[in-house]
Length: 309
Length: 305
Image (tube, rainbow over all chains, first blue to last red; front, side, top):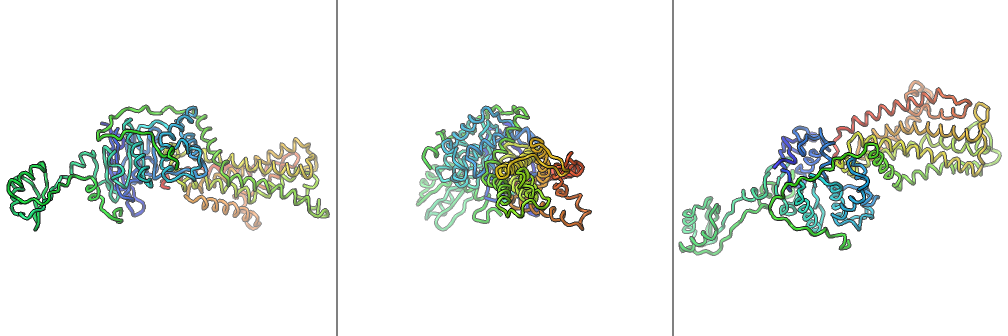
């Protein structure tokens, strides 16, 4: 699998503050890459550098096999982007705003313009609202117009920065489905979000940012597997239970007054139950904590309002 | 929001599998360069002219000559025809309303219009965020600046033409249009005089084109369109004030506005060119310097708005 977007040691400093610090992104071609991290963790600045809007302080960007921003003119026509939320002229209609962007793109064919704009509006469900002024759009409609702008011509890659920001659950689901269907068409997609739950289910790959650094990256299933399942047992016979756990080869066994916890490893939970019961241990409760990506995410990015900085 | 607008076309929610990397045909066929650029310029002009504020601005520009013509018409008859200004000649010939209006508006209203348009050009797009959309559309930065500048020059021309035409219409309606007496004492037939007026229009447009270059540069410095507009208006007005202080004679040749009133030389017979030629050279110098400055500033500016 070739690489659609790779950065090496990508760094951006604004004065004394380091917004992005030595990020090595690796987005394989054909992936739906979830770019996660709290607000202010450097996702948008990284995206801006990848698209040549902001000049890196250090490091390199390779987009679709070409160096950025050096080969920007050759690369950007193949990339559709929604950067930091939708931005359009408020007194123009949604359609007029798309016409303007289409006119600006010197690779877009004027003869097919209307047809392509209609198709893009239709794809995001805005065909009937195309004539309305942008000012009158709801936040959800604005986000969708931003996505439509990225879809005006067929692209090899889409970069969608927080496309679900401000959407209600229904709108979020719709955007997720749209991204999923584009992913199935073979378009490489980089989708950023500060909410894991919004993009987790559609992503094949994940990257997690925290305070300007990329703290985890890889295939979503591998990241999930990196979290080992654990078991928590509630019992009055703590000593006997600990013996069984040792015999089964469970690791990280910690006991308390009314039970124990242990890492499950490769042992199936039904074997644990059978062994405990066979040894006469009174089992009050047994809970298996499966790998949850959310825990990993929270572990990596921290919780609370100070998570970003 | 109506239900029809809400729903995306139904698509299957994917399984965990990675989608096969299908090669999507890339739209890499560039359109004919000139046609594509004209299309972009057309879009830019539509954006400028569809904006209500700009339409109101054109209305104000057109209102000045109308107000002047009416004011002269209802003025005390004893004041008529005195002095040697264009204003005093209006009574005898509506043609002079256009000239007088251009001379009046060149000091404030036309520069103010350019200040507004140039504030919109880059700073305005940066403020609402559409600048980043254009850049990733993509539009090369040099191409964007060039298109913005040409649209400012066209906007200048439209503004000046509106003043001249409004002046001719108002003056013609109230005083009639007649052959024009030149400053040299000869008389020009009306068609020739109208051609001379076109020369004035182009001369004023050249001045505004130079001011637009300055405005475009200022516009690349900030993300506040109002700030850019105020800065350009202040610079222009300051130049007019400095130009009116005789003690600063040494500075005057460097001021963009210094040779602009020379447009009256068009009404000599034959046209007296030397001062206007210097004026055009000054315009050209300002255009070159400030376009280069704008390009230097914008070509590697971080667009984070």
